[in-house]
Image (cartoon, rainbow, N blue to C red):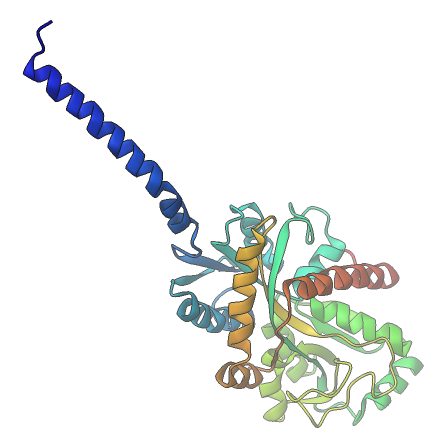
Length: 334
């Protein structure tokens, strides 16, 4: 049988193809390992508020540390909406690969405590990654009010149920929940005046249109320091280094009234454990640095490194607690 040169060439092609297939097969584990390395593309950190708020400020600070440690870009994306619902929904529906994260704060649990139409489950739809910081809320009053201590405020409120009014950044906000929790512990009743944000509420406190405002340190501490409003106590269980001269509500005798304002990072449910652990380790290391501690304290909070599981417990426990507060106080969504 006659064999053509082209036939020999064909055999060589087959042989070379077989060798290439073998080489490709041999290299596949290495290529797969390279693809599996996390992160190998930019990470998006979604913030459910406009630039300039504490969620945004903290997100940008931690994103820089994360980017440096992971040697990858971490992009902060602002998607403002009421209570951060839009941003949380985007995170919940994202691929569970660790490339879409969300910055949330205490309002994440207060909103979920009273709303059933969020489109996500505050526990089941997310993977807790890391807590960033904790801080106090300050119980503040108009500077022309006669009360010099938290006990004087409580005594007046007990004698005059509903006469004092308190402002919040909106129905279902951490401001409303913490005020109602304090009211339950102190056995007082004040009238709620909801605003669309802390700016208008703070302005009306200064102007005397409202009597009391329980506000985060980042939003009110400057007004306290300038003398525009007076602070009577902090809501944390112990005194806070953010405002060390103020007694805590627990210290003042109102047991069960402690509230910590917190900020943290979530990912979609079912993110691989090794990815979650890496993110948690990177964030916790950043929070241990002196510059990050100093930055957070300046902004009215303390670094709060903890495990992913511990952060998840905070969310679950708070959700149950706020549901109880809502039921006792009659807090309902708008």
